[in-house]
Length: 325
Image 1 (cartoon, one colour):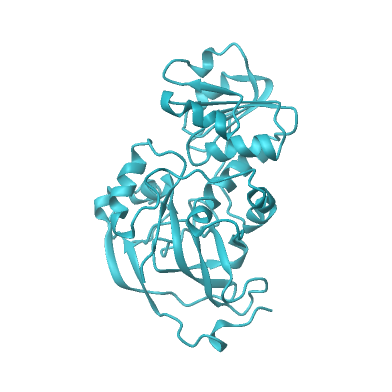
Image 2: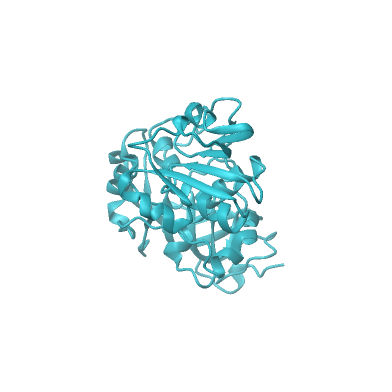
């Protein structure tokens, strides 16, 4: 069993500096609390000193109140993705120890049972099973960009039963999830052909990520393409169009609610084991997180960063760093 941090580090924080909101609305509802109380650590949890945290669209959708029917927490500290260092461990933590560099998505069920204390905080808490050891060749900024987007990309490909020799169209290939779908389809699954859509200025980026066919959505409609695909992975919420680009017998996957049957709609279940499984691809450099040019975002500029993310113009991932002491 991992050593309890209290025996080696008696100075365990009881409060944290954190961004929070106490009402739903646009990012200007965010406020900074210098003394947010940390909850008691449960037996299967670890306390993490946050060094970097990435932003996800679900953050601002939650902030806007989209999930308030089953997300009753107010006030709320936003944030799903974390990269940092373990400073304390619960009694039933078996793999991680104090001082480990870890990363993960701290909300297991996607949009239900969300934590009131997220990752836009000096410290946060997560169950051990949601975390993985950070690959040593990745910076904390790079690691924070990975968990929710990568795990979503992987789970969607698994649900679509994607495999070697199949073709895929990624709708929204330059986004947080889309850029990982392209790379996994190429390096993990061995796709026969990868097509992806973006705006005009991002077409070359799609090719660098591994797309064989970069499609300018401002000039071509995917439903009008003469070629159809074994799998269409919709990351932007257009399942009706995605279904029209699927081969007979193929599958469409969408990650934006409410979905549209027969397209496969799912909400991510966070698992540190996925990060462990895909670790070799990050260590050998085949799969890399794509960072928006505005990364790193200063901790003090969080509201502006969320406003930018809402424009859907971000490339890859926005990461907040450093998280101040």
